[in-house]
Image 1: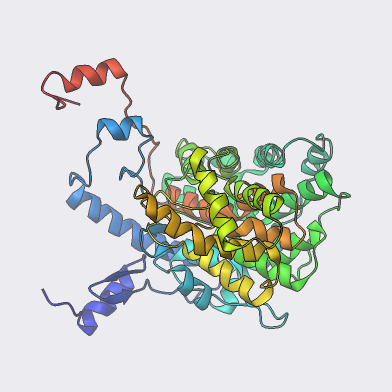
Image 2: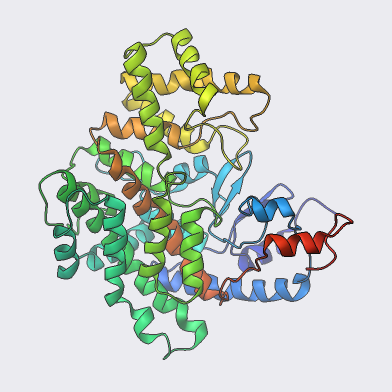
Length: 474
């Protein structure tokens, strides 16, 4: 088979494919819409993609892509190929790909601010990319910004709810409750039984745009209510999504706002199998609206072994500083890490899928090299980056000794005086809404059914395996 595509074949593919990827060395992109309206651009891509999915399922619906083992069943289905997610794919070597784009490509290609000195792309542009598969133009980014600004006024009952919560109620519990209470606005829930199934995505689109417009104001009010003096969230139509978020938190420094743009992009999507993304998809598959679905995802993200990892990293750094001071030597850092490995792990290192340094860690490191290179805690993060991987490799048991995104983010937030660690996962949740909302729209567009895998009891599994040691039937 020839490894090159003819001009006609390539043009045909560009018109019919809706997912960017690499095949036979050719970089394939979907047809970019000329419309600056995101819903119209999505409608074009959905029509093309539905046809592709129908054809593919018809031809290969019975093709096996993997087989479950007893270990998979007891091991939380880790790595078992069984889910669909069009918005991103986690490559073991290149890290997350947003619609086929690596992190470096995404940060390079998405539109950036032109007037405030910012260097990081707009999250609005990432959302357009996740929704359409295409890098947006400046005008298309402005469409998303303007839509969110128009929709962003926080309902009075949400403000009342948040301001009446105890200040010590965990910020993630506040976020989950507020999102559930936004359900009253859902067009999807109100009109679910009045439209055709192939039009449900349009109702979900409207809800998701409303949720994304409001979630930053919700998160900002949680921050000021819990830790500062409450600020009534306002939306300035001249500011971008991230600027409004930061201003409502009481943060106006351009450098911090620029980092928050980077943070929102890096944490936005990570395939469909992680707890938060999967929870959103699972609840959404029952045709719950996006508010209830996102609330479920937030509850999963609040789990200590999912969304709290950067807090564990920061605690680890604090313990290191407490023992050896703010400028520990490499030998002291190594000794501290060796002691930690005797009873546990080094937080921020290792990943279930990645087998190289997380490119999200690298992106944050490059930002810090320009803006925070003299911060003592950032220097410790870099010391750990130098010392921990060889140490873990020497054990001979660690598949991935390299840092993940959480190894850096907590120290940066601390450097920018966002010191309230219980709030960190709220930032993560706001970011993760970008990816999960893009995918839940697509899930309804593709008419995906309710998710209902089969489960077994241990006794049934033993019976199925039998004396031969192999399953006789399923």
